[in-house]
Image 1: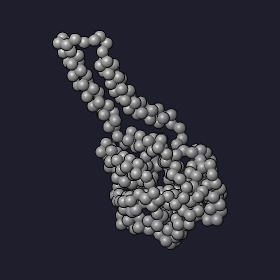
Image 2: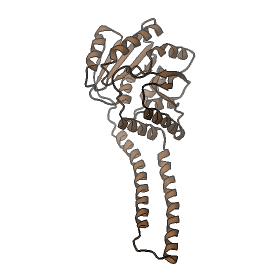
Image 3: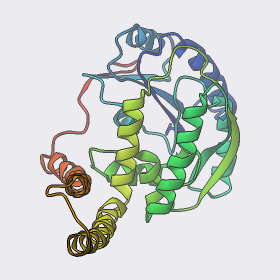
Image 4: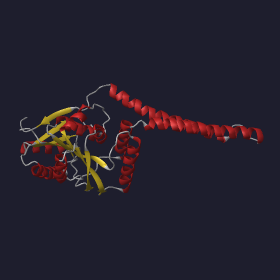
Length: 312
């Protein structure tokens, strides 16, 4: 019997919440897929707690559970990619194990797919349990990305979504190392629809997205789906040239009509200004060159240690 649904669940140190998530997810799957033709794929992304041991036990207890153990921590996006590549269902859901995104939305998501949509993505109305800083930065990150990208990436959405097999197959064909899955799915196109919901606070444990990871994730999103930073470098350079001409006129007028002290401080300011502009522009260019450097090496996206299912 072919599988109707695959549920892809990336996990990094989720021992406190994994069993609770599994129980709710299994109940949601049983309701949405009465035939039982589904699989729940748990990806252990280099956890240092008992996440992998719990996943192994779930495989023994439930033949519908598949567990993937990565050699090391690859990061959320690559962990999800591992699950997408191993999924077999005609429809695939991406969801985190922290229960901020309710598994119970699977059934209404499935109904939207039945209506002919290719992708149903969760769009957050309320974000409980998150700091003001996190909500503020997330809100304006999506708006900046939307205004700079040529791909129409929905606002206030994460990776929580249900996709058809055709969309998943096209995403799996994309081999870039710096992955921004919600942008990649948007790029594929097709009929995509939002389903609004209130995002709950994390059921247990702590968030794994530190500030540095958030910044890196935002950089991957912007540089992966927009060349605007490179154009911005040109605009900054033109503005700096215009400002430099004004300063040059000021220096000449001061030399001709006013007494000036040799080596005055303004020269230092001018030097610092242009040096800063050059470094910013080189930073933009360097980020894109760095992405090229990583891609041309052609290394495997993911190193999988083991794939477990009841028959293995």
